[in-house]
Image (cartoon, rainbow, N blue to C red; front, side, top):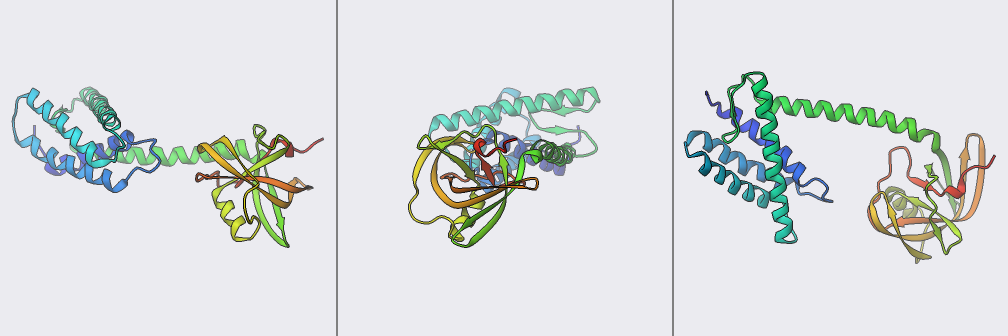
Amino acid sequence: MNVYVEYVIIDNFIFDYILLKLTFKGESNPCKKRIFLGCLFSTFFAIIFPFIRLHELILLGLKIVLAFSTVAISGSFTSFKEYFLKVNKFVLLTFLFGGAIYGLFSLVEIDYNFLYGTSDGLFPLGLLLLLGLILYGVCNKLFAKLFQKRLIYPFTCECVLYCKGQILKTRAFLDSGNHLVFNNEYPVCIVSTQLAKKLVLGGFIEGKELGVLAVTTVAGQSRVKIYQIEKMQIYFGDKANIYYNVKIGISEKSLNLSEEFHLILSADYAPTA
């Protein structure tokens, strides 16, 4: 098998980046710089391995040690247990990924060495995979956006908020599942972090909150601070409904809703026939 060093670098860097992203997927703030350094570290040894011939068991052991080191460089951990679980996830993904590549290459009669991470293909596999992932990502976002508009658009509406002569226009989503109430009486609307900043800067909400509710939002378990807006006007088609002393909830966690709306209306604001 001919070994092309540039192919080894491209393939291993892209493979490791994908595997590390999957390993740390779900974390609130994974460090991209650390993942990049982990990829560089792992790729450096991937360049060396094809030029040294060791017993396969020894090479497998070195690959496992390399996995421990790569994960340690690529992330931060609150405990050894968390670190160990991440290493196991990375190793499992590596074997699944390598096995899938080996099986695919066998079908097209391309020689691929899983332990050394080399192939005799005429083009870096990593670039092909990267192009495929980019195409998938673009198509996925495109179809998700079209699907979201089809489902969400009928339930969105224009909203105008009023306070002390100030006016703020936004789009809202009428959520039939939002039955959040304050003091067992007042329906609560949820605002995005972006809209909350505008409300604060515009003087719509001032002083101490009316109260705090523990709720489950799209951002997970969170505490929501309740404030009061002087007046809200909701447009369903050409008809405008006006409400006074509207209660809104601002999550203590960052809450990004959608490009289509920044306010989730309570089900109590649904238009009546």
